[in-house]
Length: 124
Image (cartoon, rainbow, N blue to C red; front, side, top):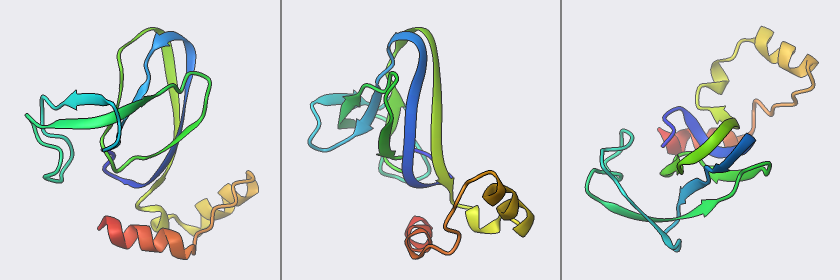
């Protein structure tokens, strides 16, 4: 469970490896995950509980998931790198200088997005 993530995340697995699927909490999933420790600050994911989920192959493939729900990397062999994009819940604190630099690099972030503001309220 990502602490400072507004939710939607994109991930891709890179490198030469086998295994390493992304396990995602999904009540309709067929893969069980028992928790050996408390996860996150919320009381939902506690040690000793069992969660249903699904495995997603991210090797060379982009996947979208909710970073605020339980997720983890399955064991793998080889060399694996993950590239993850998400929106930090402190995005609104970015200075005008940072916003201008991002725009110049081609990142067209919607700073005043109503959807982002709504997610921020829900998160807190």
